[in-house]
Amino acid sequence: MRQEYEYEVPIEDAEVMLKTLCRRPLIEKTRHEVVHEGFVWHVDEFAGDNAGLVLAEIEMSHPGQQVLLPPWIGEEVTDDERYRNSSLVDEPQGSSRSSKSLLAP
Image 1 (tube, rainbow, N blue to C red):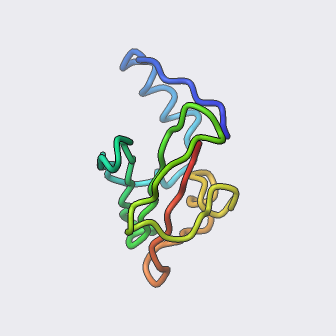
Image 2 (cartoon, rainbow, N blue to C red):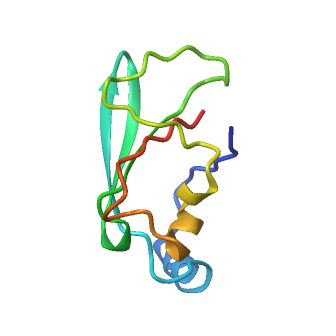
């Protein structure tokens, strides 16, 4: 379980944040939304140095909520630091790596 803050950021602020807060190279990914059993899964398909890596996450209302996993879900990597965006900059997990799935409450 992780804290998240979601709100609109003015474009000028976002540009400054990207230039000053984000380490290079930037993580490249395309997010897809997939509905399965009433839940919206966010499936990130990575590009660049992480090409070939696919992570899926779901937001649940509480940690103990029951979820029927789709058949395409792989290994649980929520607590694996290697799959955080900050880690993917320094140690890409793409190319020859197998697809992973992330279930994030």
